[in-house]
Amino acid sequence: MFLKPLLKPKEGQEIKPGSEFPCKREHIIELANECAQILAAQPIVIKDIRPPVKIIGDLHGQYIDLMRFFDIWKAPCETGDIHAYDYLFLGNYVDKGQYSLEVICLLFALKLKYPK
Image (cartoon, rainbow, N blue to C red; front, side, top):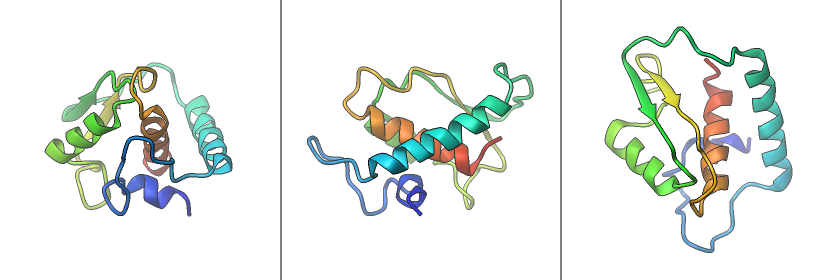
């Protein structure tokens, strides 16, 4: 499935300036549609976040910074801390950075895999 490479960003793909994004257009559209369905069913304001929580803010398309965060504090995964920690991404996912598509697709893939 097309989600696998997105959920393992460090394995087998290296972000290089000018390189082509590994997902096809139709996969990105499908990913966005599925994520939109999940988000539409959830409340806008989250009231049940309890410590411990990892808070990541204002990525602005800085994929390398997101990978650095995951290197230091670990990425959400089945063998990692996803069951012990909540992750809260505060917004400003895309815009200024050159890897906005990579950032939003990774976050969408994480939302599909871990909807709560």
